[in-house]
Image (spheres, protein in one colour):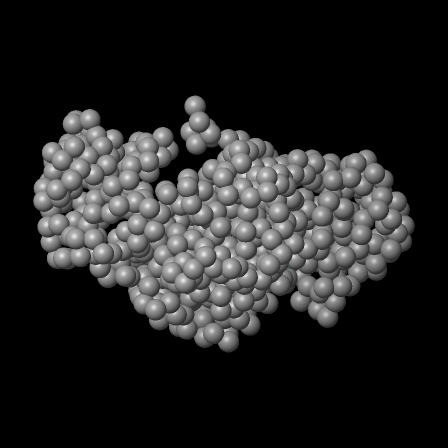
Length: 157
Length: 436
Ligand SMILES: Cc1ncc(COP(=O)(O)O)c(C=O)c1O
């Protein structure tokens, strides 16, 4: 599997158009990467749904033990878990009708990707949702990062 | 197809990367945000910026939108994950090292570096209790032999100043990676138009923007570009991977992934060492990058014409331009510098120190000064200026002869430059100690 095949800017931006995101493995520890992402996405108006059996509440949202326990549909399932856990998560994501499976940095599972694709989900692999939001919608360019965005169009202020 | 899916060319990116029209005013040119600080929307936002939970402006020692545009443009041209700008090239280098190294670590560096870099490494590392070994960079065996268990990085220039040594980047990078350490390359002389060291495995690229990036000799500045590819969690860099005492326990590599080193470089090192680039200088450097490819083409074409002319002149003993067919670096130039081997090189006059003095005094288009990479052609005679205190023997150990002249070829008409050099050579009377 080539991760670059699952980093299509069009798919990424379509995923960013969703409003409800389940974050699997979201931690209440403020220094964990998952917390950075959850905090940031919530700050930018997304409704986040924590999925973590070790938490009861994260960022003022109730945490569910598994995706299967989440009562309402979500657009994106964003995964901060060991790659070995991804196939089962992908099956649950398919079952709940999520449109996008988003695997964070280092969460690379060919089997999980295959399950999601076979059921018509779109997949993003080895990318960070916070970084991609900041690249296309946010302020990543304020800190000298290479957004790779080239455009002469005026963005709203 | 949208812009996001197109692979834009180098010239397009030189002009556009990092700088869209200003969202508030529509200004097309890059605005100069001449401000020390930024009003927070609310207390929560302020906290999020300082905690690095949100990308936000706090204080211009750490970030500034004009500086950021320059940083992004350079990072884009080098093919890196991002960049952090500094007040000078040497400030960029010291920040790179300061971020990665701890007392007891060891560095292997090319001995063919810019003299100011040699001095910097010697004195900075001695004060920080960091070991240092200089090696002749032309032989891989030297690099290998200098490694110790404590070695944490390798450092060299793409094209050495002033010797013109061309680095075998891929081989040195492979050696670094086999031993779990990054290769840091000073790409000042090549610029990303002539060579992108990261394409060959370099992990971090540093620049003196003072030179070709600015291109007009107006400002001092520097930058660090990181590829984002090095695995700082390989066990050898707890300074990047472990929770940081200088940032309330944040583990930079785990938290920010490929942006971890850059975040630490900015949020800790730039914050603490404080050598920030001014917004006005960043504007000039961003402007400079817009024409970088055009200027570099003229620089390298002129330099080769000048080198050709000098190599046939009877008062010239030798010409050390790596792009000449008989250069020992010709093979490396084919690989790493197919668009040209730079525009700074040395040649040796037959007549020693006295000939050098006479030659420089007779020039009328070349400026006699201590800089390189200006649109204007520059000249210096190291034996009577920068290296004046050295004996002839000490000079030769530094690769500089008594009659060595360093040229930085500008973008004037090559014929005019050759005319000036020709009249300079005609004025040389001294025969010196070289009679062949
Ligand atoms: C190759 C090289 N690197 C670094 C530097 C240092 O840059 P700065 O003078 O901007 O500190 C110089 C300056 O001459 C240089 O030639």
